[in-house]
Image (cartoon, rainbow, N blue to C red):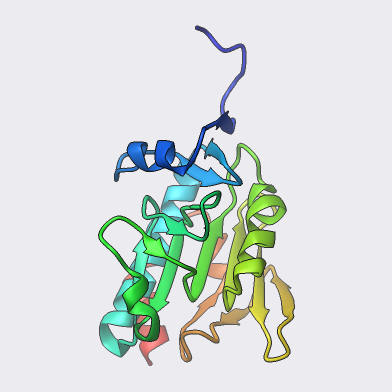
Length: 203
């Protein structure tokens, strides 16, 4: 069947239950389970470049400082039978390392990073963010290459989220004290050297 739709686009299809999703789930599967539906978002070259950049920074920083592990996409975060999103990046602190299993994360990560898709730039904020809030994820970053901005939601001690939006300057993590990024790095036509950025991060 030929689709009369030009990419990029988001594909959605219903499933009878989460077993259908996990039967498909492997490192090559592009699907994630959102509110009982299988959803596939296209990944652009820019999306993959930002993913690689941030994964390298987080991996290098954690290699030196420890205290947590980082996982990339294609590793589900199971929140309930209808929700197993696959964030672009997620950090799990050692306090919660028992949630890490061979196939999936059983429960919420401590830090989630999403990179907005060109197919539906508002998908993460519209659908995933409310579920992430309901799960009590302490820190959530949503990078938007389309608007050259980063949204950071942090869970406060009173149980509500505070939102910070930046197009430049530093964003510092509360889950990983001492880890930060310069938002200006993200919007350069050619991303800066990860080695040079790590030197800045590690002091």
